[in-house]
Image (cartoon, rainbow, N blue to C red; front, side, top):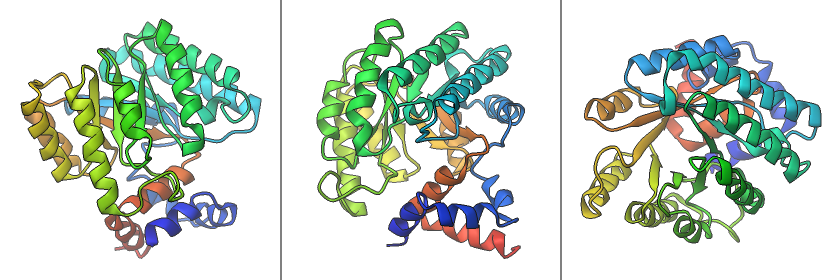
Length: 305
């Protein structure tokens, strides 16, 4: 129930203004967001790289209905990629893009063009792009744009949200050789008509999707902080003859950093999702909704403890 309330709040303008205007909030947000500037994002990327962790950087923002804002977001990604290129990370330093931030709500062609520009900038540094998935109304559009992008940039990845009923078939369709798929549980408030409801049902759906990807010929990117899912991934890797290096784990910036480092120390590729920018509200509220421990942390911090 608390998670559903927080997801509803993530799209409330009134709650956004109240939370964003509360002075201690930004201090707390710093746990989950690398900063507001390109320089802060670059510094975070460098620290994580020094700790033997890969990264995928997200310039925060979504659902823009302004063409100039969409263009500005694309330019911000290009600037970011130019800033991190001297670090020499190659494929260990990619970016994640929400298509709604680059014009998807306005026009698919606009989003496609901006995404193509970002992919080209990433390729210039030996890196790539993963398309974030948003609510269920955007899935067909996102997968259509993905197919077009892969004509010139075949390593472009995509996130699939396991809680959607359609996701098992999407995973089958995306399990071909070379296909990079980030599997997540799902972070939007979706109706029962399109998505599994309740933690147990979502967990089971995640495992079914994970099995499809691990049995396939693509490159699964297992986005989870759940030790059970990590263990299941390792069992499936053994069952399907996968070696370390032909799949990876992904975790969020500021969450379970000890587990991130332990997995990397064991030889796994671990990629940290690094968000930055001043439009942090929606992202922050979804992180609170995912785990009660995050809410407790937030409340303790606001209380000065």
